[in-house]
Amino acid sequence: QVQVVESGGGLVQAGGSLRLSCAASGRTFSTYTMGWFRQAPGKEREFVATITWNSASTHYADSVKGRFTISRDNAKSTVYLQMNSLKPEDTAVYFCAASNTSVVVTTRKRYDYWGQGTQVTVSS
Image (cartoon, rainbow, N blue to C red; front, side, top):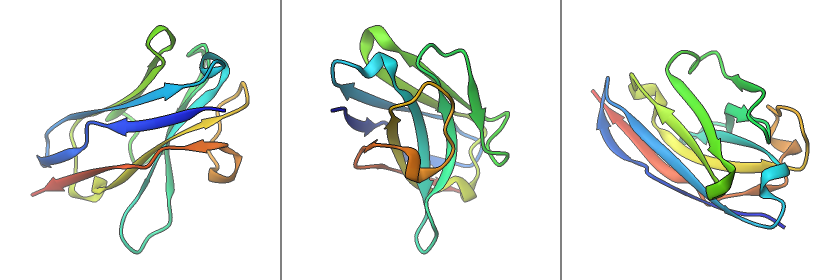
């Protein structure tokens, strides 16, 4: 059992930066692949970024590659999403999720545990 709670969302202007945090609980956190997804009103939840348990592999959606960075600190049971050069189209609720696997995972159905989401709004 893994529980995750996101924080760090807020309102920023286009071109600005935010860092999201995902605090996790569970004895096996360090063995899970972690991911970030986002969902805008009226749209389906979409993949953003993922990272393996040992940070050996990461993968990003094309829409955020070069602007966003996913990282994790297993000693703190926390995963991060650093978001730079934000655009209005990045506006969404951002979700953190955990997958009981050892490879990068990009599909929603393969994640086992989800946080409640944190709102990110980018204004022009």
